[in-house]
Image (cartoon, rainbow, N blue to C red; front, side):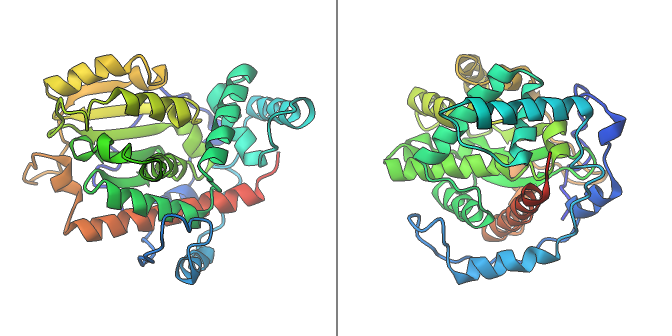
Length: 336
């Protein structure tokens, strides 16, 4: 399934590099058909082993095309040097950090751009996050936790994917449907929220080229309000301090639609806690792009939650499974 807005998010601030250009194999995968996803009804406590039904779904993804190593998983000579330096420090000099997969070293190298101190800060933060919240970065757990997030925050996450043209990861949000009070109600509900959010970003980095191209966000603020379910200092502090400020991602775009006064003020406040790379690319007051002759919807929800909320959620879960499985496959094969 192609994104309705595919091709409309081309980045102008990223670096171009002929060695790591996008391939036809990339386009074929990211514009391919979705795989069927069936709900399993597993409990939140059973995240590492979500039952035979989810295992069967993941097994069906063995038919995914082989990752195109010549392009989307290739490093420049400089990026490889950075990656090896990070690997050496983690495995030979650090007494606190656990060894990573080679692909993970490359991800941190691309994002930190040769800054070893920044890479170590991110690795330490994400390792602490994974340990605290029992994150195993498996496709099974990832899909399960995203499903739990969708159930806790209905109508908030509209879609995740990788743009077929730019190879940027994309999250589409209905910010007005988020309820931070519900997320913070208990430690269990907070784990559902923050781990689900983690996997939504992680799923959008199935190849090194998607990491390099960056991440684009589209968010609708129509129903955003002054209520603590939307503007909540405890939420923003925990979200940034426990995961978001460490996650290895370069933001290419943040397009904010239907932004009223509360949303504008909120973004001013968030400059204190959100990464500068995100704050720098926020575009408030964006208009929803439409195809020729199409009736203009008032919200992104009207655009994406079609034909029903359940079918839209299944579409999101299906794509998440595709992307997480490709990430796992690439990570198992990649070597520095």
